[in-house]
Image (cartoon, rainbow, N blue to C red):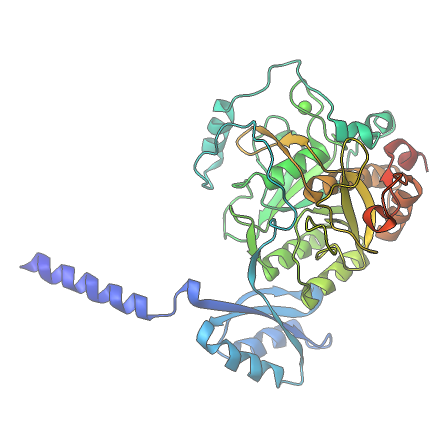
Length: 408
Ligand code: CA
């Protein structure tokens, strides 16, 4: 008898909870204020609408709010009516990898359960994953094609901070972990930035895989690597998640940021953060996109170095997006790099071309301390050679050469 009462009580509680607004039914907006409005005032005004404050984005004078989806229009119109509010930008959750990733051949063991496990469990998992035999390290075609080994006598990128803004990094990968100096999980509070997807690790490996005796070598194998996890295990995140990761890169004095992600549609808050990174001296390298059409975002914004993808025959990959914004072209077809859980896999996309150029930017900054993003862009262009038969909109300045770059 008591048992059934309790059961009914639980059922009633369940009904009550389902009637309350759930996380899934919340909608976010990026509320951008006039530059003169102080931070405390921004929060107070946003809160006055009854909205929950998700986070602050002080570099673009913004506050991210969440309200039940049914109330978002009311909050939006109240905020828009305030003289201190410059704009209210949309903040949808989208898949940022759909536009920059191509299916590839997976050599890694099948993915284990995607969980953010404690570090000890991660270490055990990494230890259990099959590893290439000692003495089997190979330099991949992409790293050769940008002439990185020829620059290594001069620099391997030591002391330069580079952020991979993506799905995280495999924190215990035997071919990467020693170069990982930190990071942040934007999307899950108090969680580490371990990669539960694999994409971020692939990109991180291209930049800074270790020169040891296994696997591959990154373009800048001594760089200080930081993992900024803005995308979930499916490659999805809101605009403010991505923008917050970019702000982290500025706040933590990253010199280079690599963004192998993109959206088909622009967003003014995203554009503002690209500019803020540029003005703060962070060199931002971003994937042009894989639609074969126009360049995606953030790559298309001024201040970002947009990268297109080439294949082993120095042709433009058919999927590579193109337009006047493309700054460089780099290897992005059949790129063998690291995967999560200590594995390796081959992937194609402008996602893979981007970290090649980010690694080159690291090598340049290492030999030219204090170089501004504009100086890095100009140096990359000067060190590049046009690929024959590729239209300008598909390659920008062309394919960069590391030896030329560091010698400038
Ligand atoms: Ca290695």
